[in-house]
Image 1 (cartoon, rainbow, N blue to C red):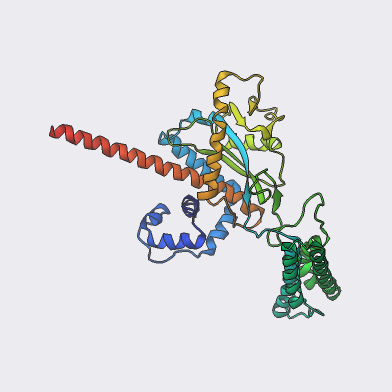
Image 2 (cartoon, rainbow, N blue to C red):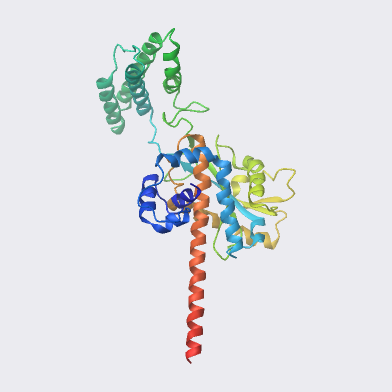
Length: 391
């Protein structure tokens, strides 16, 4: 299962595509420990989900740790390279549709109506609604989208109020019918709680909001991008080496940071985790201006240097500032080629697992490139030796 997790994020494969590739590729099977070629899956596809949940973020960090250990053993990276790192944060988007108030209201009503039918079939308990608003709710949602597109906002707001009315009626109808029935109350407590939050939340309210009903842990994060003002997912901290090693730019740490904390406030948790992961004492951290005004935790005796800093900056640190931007293409590769660009794993634990596995997959991809380079050098050396012998 560890081998499958590495292969999935190294080659950017879904669970289904990974299973298909594993059956037809003997190298994948040998990497995962098979001694003989298998013509059919020896596991169920759902086992991948179960094992990811069972291992969790802490145990999967061993894969990232192993990738760094292999890099040092094959001379792709020197152990001293791990002492100085570049830290930055990015957004790992969740696989959710773009949230609007009208879509959320209509989806909350649809989920409650669907749940009443499911409860009636499975538990044979009577939860029959007075009205489901299935037909009129869909029409009102279409009208709202058309009015908003045409900038007819008074009509759009009128349709939005109708959607709120429909959802409120369904909520109250269900609450009346589950009074005194503990089994029904247990089945409806979480969906009703989310539906009430969607109904009560306002556009410009402060604090947490619900942006997706199937992934309520999703947060709205603004990074100041002109083409994408807001992203919906979780903030992730990524660290790479300052020096460009022989095997490339390796990721030394990656961790999800729920709650959208200020970048500088994350150093107190990120730095101890990184030192425990790499087994090395950090000498220096280079960060961007988003970490300004925050230093390392008191029990870690080294400095955090932010972009634009003038005091206590030596010529060597000035040269390292020029390497700070090297983390940006690494983040781009993590998102584009290693499944951090859209997270399909459920719950907050899925956010943390996906970030760690994306970093491990990126490092193993760099190791494969480094080993190909070593093989090419060996072949060239053998070819030159053969030519000299013939001469």
